[in-house]
Length: 394
Image (cartoon, rainbow, N blue to C red; front, top):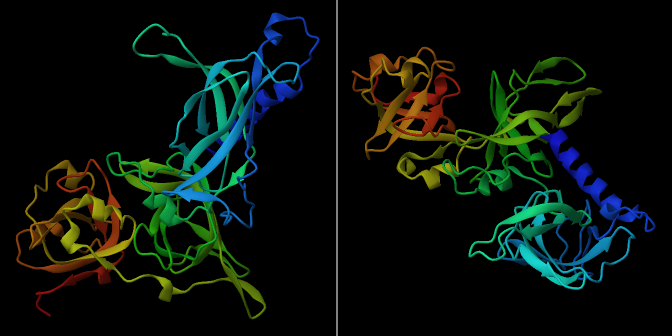
């Protein structure tokens, strides 16, 4: 994804450069007419900087960054195409234009057009591209892109954060992140490792409660290195930054193939990884939320707990258990959540427990899988201490 993004930006610039490098004396007919567009922000819009991403002068309306752009149609002679009258689509390279995205240029100009920019993180650009209607006489227009375009200078939006990635959802099944398929770098926030598994680790934004955690899928056991050794990433490690591609796995938001940098500190003249387990947040009680997907979504990848639950009756020969080792926990309120203990607490036997009357407090990482049943939410205990039997004989 990172390569594709770089390629896309390079392609956009290559097409724009053709405008500035055109030969006005070229007699070839393909080198006449529209070559592309210049796209500039109105002087009222502050593009910001690496250090100042949200200038006070920048207008924010309903969570959208408001900017005005000036667009000029350019011929191959690098001059304004004064006889150009055409239709363009106005979009963002990464974010979403919530304003008028299709409009017309007259006499080669579009001045003061307002763009309402949503879902912008890090750096972004406005893209203007010519379209033509292949069905001008019909009731339903059929617009297609011609390949003639222009891009604005970069502008700076807020630094990516876990809350921004998890909390900005697009409304599809499983409430996927609006930044899915985007390569992002988490930085500018305090982040702590809350759990480590064979294929990755969980990261929580310290100080946040809702949408505060994210799974980083490293596809192998995550390691870190300091002046002393190379070790498995310790729980409680503070992470300075992490980069990767945001993806959705059956509704579960992940950062895939991450690279990450822990916070280091000096101890006895050596650079060591900074670990602070006191920053790991307390489990969030979701017992009363089990039937509310929108509320459960807020705590995806977080440490949660369900209280006073029992292993519900289930078919141990069903693929949900035989292939994925998932079994249901039932709350007194009637809510259901799945659990999976085979890898982290193999001593817990759900087949035996479904015939018993034991009740438990179950704690662990909250996962989601939109194809799971009878619930899409799954709790994975981190270790034996995450399962507390309330009425077992001591």
